[in-house]
Image (cartoon, rainbow, N blue to C red; front, top):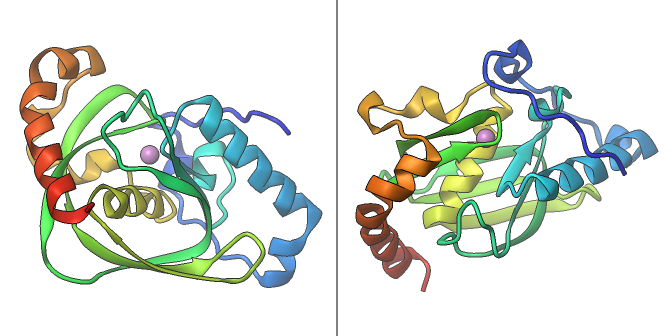
Length: 191
Ligand code: NI
């Protein structure tokens, strides 16, 4: 396995639309080895997710995993999930406000509005169907990662640029108030 380099905002690859894979291609040793690298790179960088375009491969694959994550200690856990050709559909017009960050956007967070209930469909890495309803922060993470496969970065969704903050200033000034939102989102969607 190889830890890949992560593309940084401004690199054109992050604006490309990823191409879907066929089942045959997904089963190939090259793509399966690539998925191993994607997962390894995500874990090495403490990401909650990583899309193939972020490691310079315009393929419709992303990895998501939330354990005890030092970048996002408040996020409910998500077991390792590899999504191939994923599609996200909102299940209601309910939204919540989330401070997002991204491994491709160094040292910046900002407030993004995300659908609170979504359906995610696609394939697992073995080509079997993936079909899950996701809520709250998990729904937000899914939307963030699948956005990458359409050439979108969270900064595109930040309506109020005054919410942009470095990670240090987030901890200093915004974490306290945001933890109240976190408690509300967790209470509403994660129990
Ligand atoms: Ni990202």
